[in-house]
Image (cartoon, rainbow, N blue to C red; front, side, top):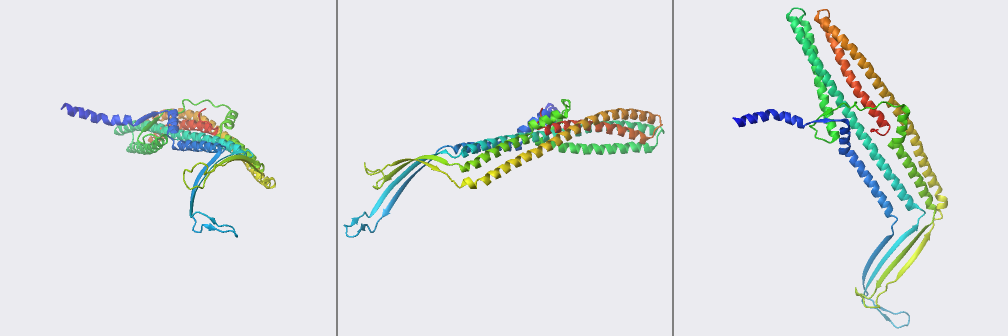
Length: 437
């Protein structure tokens, strides 16, 4: 009996325990951190940085000396091994012969017009571009998390208001049923409250369905168990006041990764021009070669039966034709650099319009909150007035329902406006290139 009681208690507590395990209170900063840590896109961005760093190492390796070594063995069969030239005595050759030949060489480019230096510098700059790409992806992931977080918060707040509405309707329905039993109102009044209750219940079902969808999407973004029910905190409690538009403009031109990338790509284009110009310069190299010649046939020859000559050399080469054929390549490189400068100018204008638009949208969101707060006060007063009139059988059920609907719709609109203002603030920060400021 005792064991059965224990089992029953565990059975009753288990759903609550499981619910607690799958529910997570989550602040906005925690959500952003989780999204960054578990983002597959950011891991891919890091892989691109690693690839760029490796390309830089390859460019540095090109400055190292090159070395080669080879070893050759040959065997010859000589069927006609006697050679007679003119009237001289015949020359008798062996019927077969073996030979071993080995070579080893090392070469280094002393001067190549600076092309190796320019290649290394260009690769180093492109590594910085890859790093900025990763920073930009980090901002995009952060904003995606923020956007979904605010959407989930709006749904949950709307659900709370709808729950309050349903509770109020239930009270109104009981009152209408009591008035009907007393003969104060008609059956039609009771039916109207029942219809309102059904409509609000359908709204609640739709809100819950949307909440599940957004909750799942945020779980995936954060890289956590998809069954986790997230409870977002109020994301607006730490919002800062709004500085001037110029301060956000300055921040955008200082922080936007795309503008920094244009600057770096302009430097890459400048290095490319220098590299193309280097085609007209001569190259200088040095080298050393070691030979091993063993015609004796045995792998390890006796003394004085093999040769080991060594050579040292230097070479200077100059493709003089590039003095008149290279100028159009230089012009092409300069045109490419000019195009980068024009792209930056165009993007700069886009940044200005984007920051201004987001700044104005945030101001509009804040002003909406003030208007809605006033409308709630008015709707609350109107609801109290109609409730009193309906109780005294002065107002109809329709008037009572309309007043209550206006009140709860105003409450929902206020919660949505607050969340929209918070999202507008982070959208403004995103347009400056740095969400966390």
